[in-house]
Image (tube, rainbow, N blue to C red; front, side, top):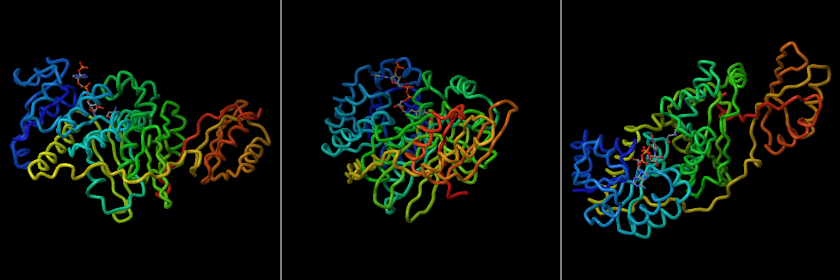
Length: 430
Ligand code: NDP
Ligand code: HSE
């Protein structure tokens, strides 16, 4: 018997209980032994009772899992940094294997957690922490291990993808769709981490670390959210053959340097990620042998996330039976240089309001030209007043050159406002 101690009867925890109950027969066959939920801990036991768990298995005290020598695997689903970190560290010190879905914890405390797992020769699995039900961590560590990974580009936050999809399909304003996403339970009551890109930033930090075998923390990721995206930007994107997505991008250069960033991006309509809509997530990977692949599915929710947690439990169960724990441990063997976003080259979309009079365009083009910024596309829309809206797409430029140009433009009397600046991504798909 493989005994599991479950910590947390919330959304994901309840999914784990339900799935284990429903598919116990096949899960046990696939593991090679019976998986038993021996103890369930939560601060609110009524939530666990509602799942039909026997009273004798319930506790409010984590020590009832920690000091039970028969428990092999601890499944942490309470979320947050503390006390989750302390519980996991103690579990590993006691020789217990750990499964978690806690992206905040891994993105911030990955090194400490892996060191502890290695010291105590226990398994530490976290497939559900990135993109919920989509298998991506195991494939990167195992199935794609023969490749040099060149890039990982993800739509890793369901809430923002839902908002951008609805703005695009239904022409509704950001605040209106955000309210709906909260009512539907996609966005958190405080949706800041979703909207401002931090949730996706944590997830891409985890994926970049695995893909490039070098530690990338959330502080290394450049993060920009979607709150400045307007219906105007979406309209111009469509006219020019793009969609706007919140992308989490990690790339490795030929010199081994890494870039990791989260920001809204103009993505060519032909790019496979452009068709990923609503709350769905996807991860696009390019490897030197496999070429391009894309993993698509539900990035959150009770059963999709529980599916990943169960996959981890089963694999650890097999390791226990074959005395093979610690097989896939920390894979950050190297310490690669992480580039600052100002050092990167990209194409940019710029939307600005300018005076509608002779010589304005020439003046603006001159500022870009003198800062090494070459323009690829220029569109002007007039609304009949004194001002016009100018849409520019640059060629590939250094981000610091673009920023220098924008500083000068902001000080020019003929420029009313720089309304938005958005990077272009996936241009090999044009
Ligand atoms: P929930 O808030 O639904 O569930 C957490 C449960 O743990 C609640 O019952 C909570 O009780 C309980 N809890 C919190 N702190 C403690 C504590 N100190 N001791 C005992 N019990 C505690 O969270 P989710 O299930 O949504 O998320 C769990 C983890 O999974 C998080 O790390 C999250 O990031 C991750 N995740 C979630 C996804 C999802 O779709 N929900 C998708 C992918 C990952 P109370 O309600 O009283 O606070
Ligand atoms: N808030 C997250 C999202 C849930 O919207 O994708 C899972 O991490």
